[in-house]
Every structure is written in structure tokens, then in C-alpha cells.
Amino acid sequence: MSPTHPDTFYAKTKRAAEQIVLNARDPNGQPLGTVLRLGAVYGSRIKGNYEQLTHALARNRFIPIGDGLNRRTLVYDKDVGRAAALAVFHPAAAGRIFNVTDGKFHTLNEIIESICSALGRKPPWLSLPL
Image 1 (spheres, rainbow, N blue to C red):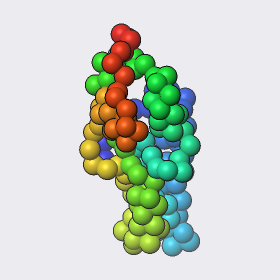
Image 2 (image 1 turned 180 degrees about the vertical axis):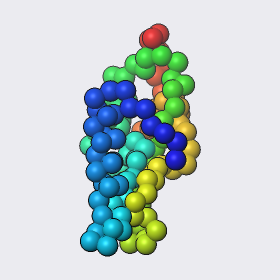
Image 3 (image 1 turned 60 degrees about the horizontal axis):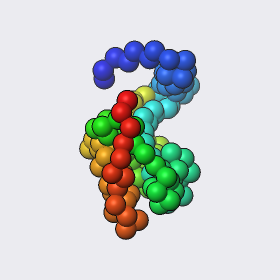
């Protein structure tokens, strides 16, 4: 596992919460918890940034900022459920940390192009510089 270096309050509290989970033990001293570090979760029932992005693109009310080459990891909501079930039932999962993604890096441009393709629209042709 690579060491973490949280530098914001949010990141520090997430890491502290992970430590609480990893330090949890049963009466025999065996680890109880598993940490799942999720990529950006998307799916038909997920409310949040990707839903807002989809609505903005559908209404032609989204202008990307920057070159769109910033990368993200993604994970489908049903895959998060599968990962959680594996973490609960797999005997070797307790006490460990898992990154849960689709295994790829996606640029913001690729995400926007995919959403626009699904909407039957062209991606925005204009972007604002950083």
C-alpha cells in the first residue's frame, strides 16, 4: 500500500475514519472492517455531480473549464454493491484497503463525449481556459 499524505481537512477526516475501520477487532484480535476507496460512482439512481453534468449537457448549459484532459476513475453503482458484498463475505478482506474502480482512467473530455453520445448530442465546442 502506498502511503497517504492527506492535506485537507476532508482528506484527513477520511483517512482518520479509515484508521478507525482498520483498527476494529473482534474479541480474538482479528480485524473486522474493510476499507473501500471508490472512484466516482455513476449509475441511473446516483444523485450528484454526474447527474448534474448530464442534465447540464442535455440542456446545452455546460461549458468545460480547462483542456478536459484531467483524469478520473469511475465505478458503476452495481459494481460498488458487488465490491461491498465481496468485502463482507470474503475471509481475506478484513483489515485491508481496496481501490474500487473500473480499472481505467477517463479524461473529462471522454466522459463528456460519452454522455453526449448517449444523449444524441454533440459535445460542447467551447471551453474556458483555466
